Amino acid sequence: KMLDGLLEEIAYILREIQIFDYNIRQRGDAARKELKEAQSQQALWKAMCEDRLKDSLPRTTKVNQLQQELSGHYIVIEEYFMNQDVQTAIELDDNSDNAQTTSMVDDVFYILKKCSERAFSTCDMNSACAIVNLLNSMLQTLYKDQLSSKLAVCWEKTQHLTQLLFAQDQGNQEKVESSIITALNNIQVSAAHIGTLKNHLMAHTMDVFEHVPAAIKMATHCLDGLGDTRDSYMRIVHQYIAKFVKDQVSKVSGPKALGTLLERFGQQNYELKEGDYLTREANDSYIPTLLLALESQHKAMNGRLTQSNLELMLSALANHIVNSIETYAMRKRFTFWGGLQFDKDVRKISSLFNKLSTKPIRDKFSRLLQIASLLQVDKVEEILDYWTSDAQVWRLSPMDVKAVLGLRVEFSKAAINKIQL
Image (cartoon, rainbow, N blue to C red; front, side, top):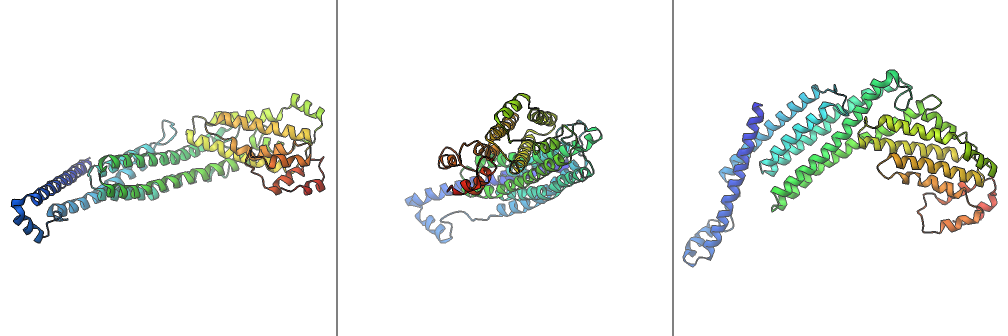
């Protein structure tokens, strides 16, 4: 508290010096202009020109020198204060209230916001940028290392478990699962806070230094570093969520687990006749079971993951499912009716993801839906009408198109090879 008060006083003094220096120079400029235009004062103006005071006051005065010295002391003390308070916040980290994030996240960014705002309040862009650079360095090292190490420790524990995020009966795994979710939330929310802090300081700069382009340029370059740090945090989140979904889906066991249900897709028969198609439409239990499992997992995670992480989880899960279905589909054989059934199955899964997600996710299924449309053509030559149409952007290469057409039992290899795409 003593240091905090001292820093506030130093920041106030630095700000007053800046204002004093600015006002003196403004008055000096006005006086020189008036003197230059006054005919009776030409002798004095000539003397000033000889003393090199024609254009401005000295660039560096004794006041400026004292200001620079005080600014140097301020930066050192502010860095020490920031380091000590952040270290304390890390040591006192707690999640006793079972919140989405631990106490460390909000505490650390409260401290960083306070220190950076104080630095900008000095109206000295050199001091402000120095503090932002120190702050950014801390976010890239001390704080980021703390977040990453906690996530790594939690992740290491999962390597010995077989039932985690997507298990129906989590039992003793609840504590480890919650730790992973909280660690992911900590990193994502920290990234969001970094972005908010960057925008806040930029808005403050535009307001205070509106008529000082050089200061705005300097602040923009400095604050861009915070944007890079935020992006590095989000790369960690993307990496671990994708890995988490992939590993845990593959480790899950049980008849209603997603991993098992996706394996069942590989057992689905799509060499259907019209009667088979109508029978499956009336009695299909597989797709409803898969959709129910997906909805159950979304419900289990909703409220525990942050909204941003929940969206990332859905996106990673959609990617995993799309890739799995395409892999299985390219090993199968299809009839026209089988292609029709495949199209219906894919559209049901796609519709569920669009229902669960607040962000557009249909694009992830566009390649699968194009495969489904190819599997429903009556003749090989029909593909030429689709291929030359401007109605859609093809996600399949000519080689992919021929490979998909080769899955149809009715089409000969010779007929497929004849088409020119």
